[in-house]
Every structure is written in C-alpha cells, then in structure tokens.
Image (tube, rainbow, N blue to C red; front, side, top):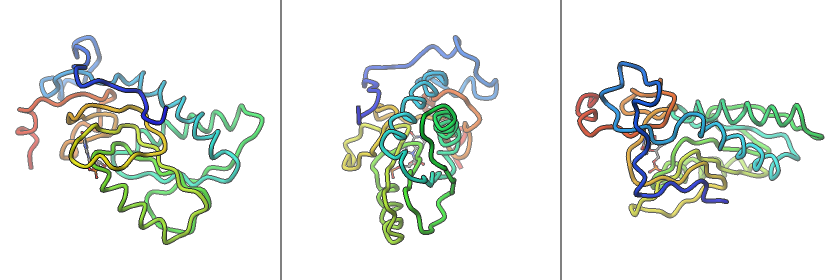
Length: 193
Ligand code: IMP
C-alpha cells in the first residue's frame, strides 16, 4: 500500500459542473481530479496506518508550508480522533519547519514531484538526530525527471499533471479551492507573475 491510491495516466477527472467550484476559478479549471471527500477518506486511512507505526511515542508533526496546511490539519484531525477513541494514545505537538531536537517526527507534505525539496529538508532534519522520521505526502507525481524519492506513506499517486486546490497553488492562487483540480493551460498565462 506504500504507493497509495493509483490514479492512471488515462484518468481525466470529473466534469467540474457536477461539483461546487468558486465562481472566480470556474473558467480556469479543466476538471475536478480528486474530489474533496475522497481526499478526506484516504487521509483517514493514512492516519490509522501512521498511528500503527508511530503511535508508541510522542510525535512531532512537522507541516511543510504553505501547500501542506490543509492536508496537515485534516490528517491531524483524524489522528486526534484515533487518540480520543483508541485503547492507547500519544501526545502530538505541531511545528512548521522550525528545526529543533525532535523525538519522533512526522513530516507532512502536500506533493512530491522529483523529491528534491524533501531530500533537502530531511538532510537538515538529520542534524537534530531525531529518534524516528517518517514522511507522509498526500500526492506523489509519476515523473521521469528524477523518480528517486518515495515517502513512507502516500495518499495518491498521480500522473505527471499540474494540479491545484486543497492548499496546492499556482502562484499563490487556488489554495482556496476544496477539490484537487487540473488547471487549464491558458489559466497559467492568466496567473503568471
Ligand atoms: P520536488 O522538489 O520536485 O519534489 O517538488 C515539490 C514541490 O513542488 C512541492 O512542495 C510544490 O510546492 C511544488 N509542486 C510540484 N508539483 C506541483 C503541482 O502539480 N501543483 C502545485 N505545486 C507543485
């Protein structure tokens, strides 16, 4: 299950007119690629898998800003629910890529493309000699550019397409969109800086 829910290269997504989309983004989006409800359902299961592996010690959940903030908040809500309702529970503290001494670290990322960003962060974290480091990424992109890095937990493995929404942005826009959607090419022009 380490590769996450596979979305094939042929998948084009869902007709956006069947979903609620903010008016200001309607003409910019091709399709709804991963609906919000599916993101939350997959996140619930990731929370369970993570707690099975890491739930014996205090966990520092490290949010990689800015794109990771929605996934981070929803993942932690599910982990907190497990803590409330399970036979055992562990304290969770949160941090936002501020390097300190950590015990167990769960790095929460939105998307991994080549893995360069994550490798750089992990090499910084190593200096602090954490007891255990695990990485969860909501999305992993299938790309031939440098497909060398794999997180410990993956929500969805997606084709090599540019996606926005659920805090993923294009030049800071589209974070205020619930679903993960495919951006139209001409919208890249519109929001280019
Ligand atoms: P990597 O270092 O190549 O793995 O790139 C990861 C970073 O690129 C992420 O943290 C995002 O900020 C950004 N990124 C890559 N693909 C996308 C995408 O499809 N939508 C939005 N941001 C992306």
